[in-house]
Image 1 (cartoon, rainbow over the protein chains, first blue to last red):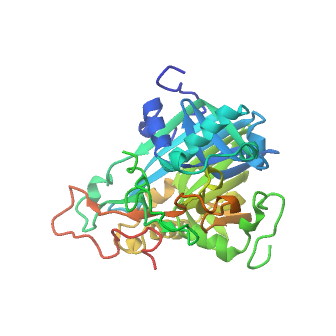
Image 2: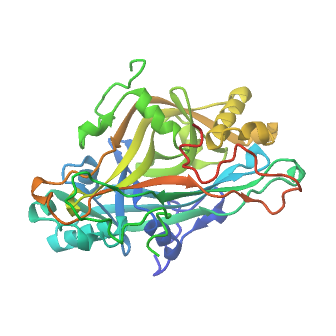
Image 3: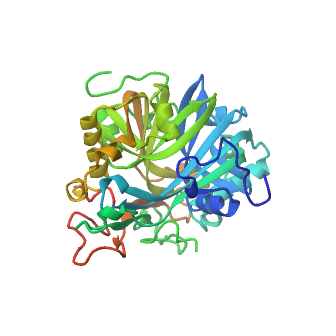
Length: 224
Length: 224
């Protein structure tokens, strides 16, 4: 692995439509940093399992966390291989022909093995990364974890051994013979948006929505 | 498997927070029918792989499709076990304490094995399901697949052998001792929205945006 890109190996090389493949960390990390949900795949007794979970990136590692009793986290800390995917759907690509319909997307796939983060200070820092990834500004406002809460939480660091990204970000590509068809073609953008915050009905009086909580903006834009 | 629910087995039983687990088809199929992207996990040479891809549901099967050259589809048609996940992020759950932060979500995990759909009429019907899932109304408007395009496309049907759903759909649950903290608590909704359609710049004159193409609505609502 060079400083700024992942080595291409049979494992991480994008085979279908290789022009959409990217191996540089800048591209891959932008995709990782713009989402908060990933899917983790692992093998248990020869069978594939997949778990959706929150994550954060810490330099060249993906951090996972959850209850110490979580099956996925218990498996992850055994050091067996994990594969982690993060996918953004950016739009429906509507071609004149059904065959050329597609979606615009940015996806990253990470290969690595997990290790347990045991040091309480490192765990605390990981929880700060998770919280700030969900919502920048939240860590300083919410009540910090107590020692028993830290103890009930497992944090796993997955060092990225290999990774790749795949991106499609353009309009439909129809065949020459279809270009004159009277069919609308283009892209219908899709983006996840924050709605209006819904306050708990048991809030104490006088607590307004803090400035750092966004509304009606794309989830990927409010950090800018 | 009963007519309307999946049997609970060690494979599909929700272990972490079992109250969030669901096994009835109505709940699971609603989750499946409200999204168009899934993640498919499979095992190759003992290692986990994961691929994001479009899908459609046909009764008790998940349909996958793509180029006949796709590694995932070639693997899928060997009949080896696949696990498929569909996850909706519905909101950030902001508790008074960092520890009780969470997300609201609806996820479905499907276990099954793939078989190739070889019959041209069945393949054509599958492509109609894919197209109508992306955008109801599109199939009748776009140019239908030619025979050579059908031939270049693999369709795999994954019969659902087991499945479960997991749902969190409520506000933060803070500890009693934290209820008087001066911290805003509640849910910040997240939903994927369609933006404004972007027409290809090579459209022939006079082609307006068809009525069936939505804009500025949640992707899950435009079919209602």
